[in-house]
Amino acid sequence: MIVLGLILVALAVGLGFGVAASSADDATLEVFGTGLGGTVAGVFFAGAATAAALVLGLWLFKNGRALLATGAIGLIRRRGAQR
Image (cartoon, rainbow, N blue to C red; front, side, top):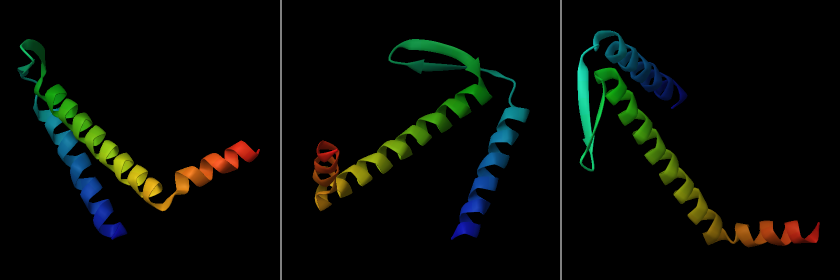
């Protein structure tokens, strides 16, 4: 699994560098009726950052639910109150 993860990371980095190197054209991104100007590479990396934030949020949601389900949050609070 580690090797597969490293391969996927290498492919993603290669794709990012490829987009950044080959895209100097201007692009307009419209969000909620407001136009934002930038390059194609900038739009690509903004999308990548948005996807990373989504994955991080889902991961935090999953781990938070697991902590609630096991009662670990109450245990952590009780230990903090004892100190």
